[in-house]
Length: 79
Image (cartoon, rainbow, N blue to C red):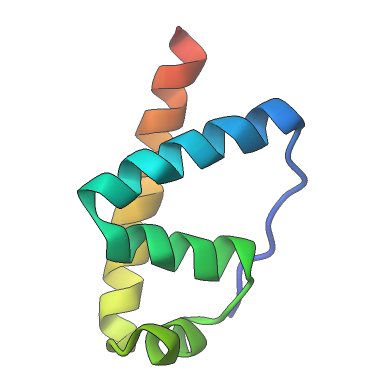
């Protein structure tokens, strides 16, 4: 169930790091879920256990965080 990260270029890695830092200021739990799921490769259940929340919460926050990051990274591409 873990998401395997695609290879990222150095500039993409920097953009993702900056976007994750912005997300962390808005919602630390969502940022933590992205780090655990995308970067560490944990499953929903493993992430839920690590954060002490339900799998349903992880799934919801994962969807919200991915949508927010997608918009944020597209904004960066436009500039």
